[in-house]
Image (tube, rainbow, N blue to C red; front, side, top):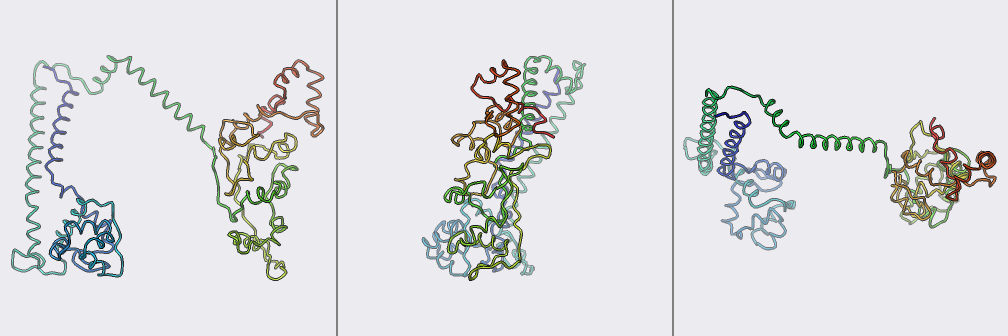
Length: 444
């Protein structure tokens, strides 16, 4: 009879599992419960076993409550919520007057866990007591020996379990030795050889499983690579809270008033503190929730609002945290998009008239909800997002606003009318059709 290595392993695993099942069912709950760990985590900050601390000592506290006239189960209710116990049990109400410091509630502790904690406490010897010649006393407490003796049978059970394990392992060893000595077992296969033989036998399923596993790994890796440098929902903290809905929404201030270079340069710029002071010399927010924020503007500008107000000359610059940050190899020009392309600010930044929170990189799903925005699918501030927009956004040509695009329009119309008609099939000439997909347009 031939018995393979895998069959031996299965038999040994079955026997070991059986032994551990016996251990699980025979080992008493008192051994498995970590009463000492729960005591240190929940109770040790206020209680000690044999000494009063922030709370009273807890040695044999269950006996104390029972002999003191407490209702049955009241002590467990006390641990879960002392206020409930004090309301239902006069003894618990008296205990609550022991200290002015209220006890913490532990509603997550079960009755078994509470008993485990108290069993552990009752097993602790009193360090202040001295050992006498009386063998029935340990630390001056006759019950300590009884508590220790009550667990002596546990060690007997553990010893029996270890004997069973030793006999089981010895039996398996004898069986393996007997099998390997038989003359019929001529060829010995290693685990690797048996696995290869099994894989070859079921090669179709192994191949399909390997293919599925490989594709899953590749898809996971590619999706992970595609999320690199995706910063949707990025929202750094700012030194001063600026509610756009109040300024651009309720007060109707144009974006270009604060970001005054957006139509003239590559950068939209951050407003200087002097721009803020144009309004906030008169609007100090006194008595309003945002008065503290306006005081920060005054500190930055060196403005003393007392009396008629005056500049002190002691300024403190505002350090704003940049929200929309592009890599160094990417070129983006605000004026080209705002003036020439006619792109509204809300296409990229969202509807600022409704944003009370600090500025953040809006997710593409939120941008798509705004009326008038081009609907895109790629994550905000990614290359795919820009390419999608260039494929859908039309360029107003021949309106005299930009000589560069006007010249492209003229050459296209005069020199290649077939291509011009092809571009105009959808009724517009898009950015991509005018070279907006060329790498050098956006990358240095």
